[in-house]
Structures are given as C-alpha cells and as structure tokens.
Image (tube, helix red, strand yellow):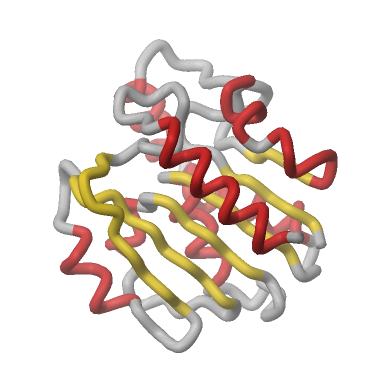
Length: 181
C-alpha cells in the first residue's frame, strides 16, 4: 500500500526523512512547498503565505493527486494533518485508506467533516489556540479514534520544532511501522 507523509508548515527535511527511514522507498513526502524546507525565513511568514494562497485547499488537492483514489496509508503533521483530514472526508479518499494525523490544530475549523476511512487523530496536550479535549468529543466517530498525549506541545514529532520529543517520536514511528507491516 502506498504511504504518504504530509509535512507541517516547515516542509520536508532530512531529519524527518531520517525519522521515517525504516519505511523504505514506498514513502512519498508531501509538503506545502516545492522542494525541501520552507521558502520563508520564519514560521509566521510561512503560515501567512500558506493561508493567503489558499494553501489548505491546494495541499488537500496535492494529497488527492498523489493518492490517486487508491488505498493509502496517510500520515500527517499540523497543516499536513488538517489537509489529510479534509482529504479523508472527501469523495476522493479511498475507504480502505488509513490515516494517522498528528496535532492538526486546524481540524477544529472542520469538525463537521467525517472521514471515509479509519482515522486516528493524535493531539498534543498543550496547544496555543485551543483546548484539544474540547474537539475530541466532537470528532470521535465510528471511523475516528482520538487521543491526547499528556505533557506534549504542538510539534512533538518534528525534529525541527523546539517541542520535539525524540523518544516519543521514535515510539510513534515504531507504532506506525507496526501497522504497516
């Protein structure tokens, strides 16, 4: 089964690739940007540019184009997780796909959407803009399992984030790998 990893606003980087190196050559990394990294000097500029250019819709379409209506393992982080949330709730998502979404904070803007495939949503306990526990109750569904990892902050899976937790990230990647085998 095809594997798509949709990155956060920082894009694809060597550290992220290294974290998922055991997944082999079946992985396609997608980013809100062309090429590796981000073309912006800081996160605030990147977020503003992403939002100004209808980034979420474009990212969702990029995912749909790559998945090609085939069963796919979908893994996403932050804006990548939210774009995947939108994709999983679209007719383009194959019902046999499986999604694992990490700290997709903008899912809160799309709580009415219902994924067509099995989806696991993992929130950090501490988010700057909202309380994850308030959203979990609204989005849990027969296809949606939600959890909040205690003691974490947004970005705990991103090697470039100040909130990165290497041991936790490796444990989550090992868990994801076990599901794919």
